[in-house]
Amino acid sequence: MSIYVILEGVISFFLIAGGAFIFIGSLGMTHLRDFYMRLHGPTKATTMGIGCILTASMLYFGIIDSYPVIQEMLIALFLFITAPVSAHLLAKTGLHQQLRRVEKTRGEPAELRDEEVGKKPVPHHSDAGHD
Image (tube, rainbow, N blue to C red; front, side, top):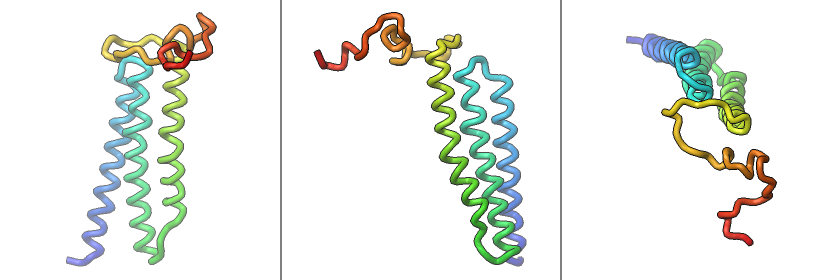
């Protein structure tokens, strides 16, 4: 068995895994109940899917051209840096807008306290230990 047959199997695995992750992330966008749960679809599963597809592309074109592919590495780096940041900003916006959430999404984050939303003009938390 040739090394190219094994590498084709590895590339195929990454392509199928990437497609499965992207499909599951898309289903999560449509089937999860509230905004906070829907954030997991595009941020986690889709990022992994695109990462797997980029890995397959790096392997394939690295084998054909016989040199490392820098473009896919830069795309993956940019994706893995920007996806969590944008998800964090979307979640913070949802908290400040006080979007409805399902009972399964529990907890009272600090952003939902009255002094953070602007109902009571207190510049600092009273539980911070500073007077």
